[in-house]
Picture 1 (cartoon, one colour):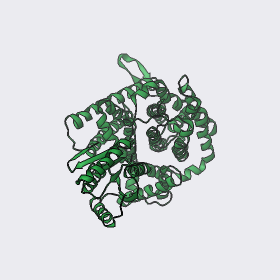
Picture 2: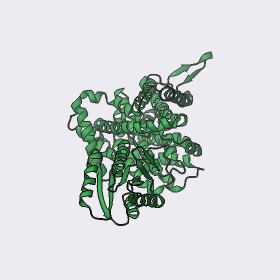
Picture 3: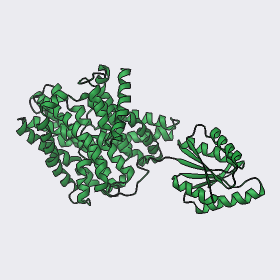
Picture 4: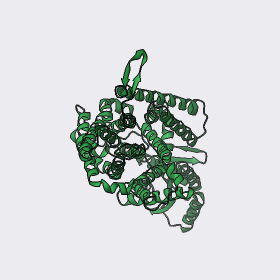
Length: 544
């Protein structure tokens, strides 16, 4: 089992990076690794890991939904609230109906089985859509109109709807009839008639439990201080979110996935600093979870079944996407402030299939429902075709179809790299500057540039500076530069050329002539530099 995990992690990571370097999404490489390692080809993954695939997939989806909730913007959702709600119901419904009707013609399925297939294929994949939308938010694409937020919310709601209808149809086909439920007073209703009430209940209770879980986390992690660092915060939050998902599986009265997403969303409103810490923690968890998710997706694909229905399966998917889902997208954005380019972006941004299809695609076949083999094969086909294409097309078409706005760093993790410039001379303050730069670089996991502007050639002094930098920055990645010219101008030029985060330099020397010279240099840099400057007087004092 441990050897299988090593194969999954190492091959999933490196083949994913090869795919990225070739210009494709890493998940393409991960899915390919799953196919190669799975029972269809290499048979390398142990049975214990394959048997635990559903649990591992649930864990990965929980992580990505927490990331989604922690990245939602309440103001943008309020601005596009109607669109988000419609995206949650209309595209999934119209795609499911279109696939149902097409399958009745192409595969001769009856209406309930065709609709069951439509529910499996119509569900959207949070594992593909959420990272894509969060990436767009971190880059600013479509954020002005809240397009990524609307897609994220709509995707979560659509899965609630389709999973409920799927469960209802599964029960109907398995029992050979419509289950009737007797209410108080002797009134009898079918499960189909109760479906709207079930949907409302699942959404409302999911939001309620997500809010209560968020309040509990704030109480434990912020008010009562049960944890000491961000790693412990992340462990507690992940455990609580996973508990919501597991409980929802046993008590299907609320949506565990929606509750998880709501948990992240309400944390932003209740305690923004805690939400920021958790956002960084779940970003780290997703690095590992993503590999397991997509490698195990690839391992679950049945290649021999795919070959039997390849062409009709592609036709079914095309009808569902280009007819059914397109009608739903049009109705969802009707009357909104989205232009035609932004509406067209829904094609790559809101059509990927993967997670849900892998989770439920095999259930009809396992329960002996006629047509279950066809449902499984088309579910696998939808993963292979739409997941890679959706991940690639989201980033490829966003610059062409969306408008770039201002990034809100309070809602997404903005990747930044800290690069510090240590401007040193041959005075004793060079030591203080290097010590401060080393401390700041360690705190931010950053790099450094050590710059010495040469006025008079002094090889011995420069060698001493290099040795001092080597000693004080031994665990920091740094570059030692020497240039000649006017000191203030060269410091600012190098800082701008290398796009440094901040300049660290001494304020004055110890000799009278050095106080005049270095003091004037620091003052000139402070007044002219567009980059923040940290001035040091001695080891215990610094100022901006």
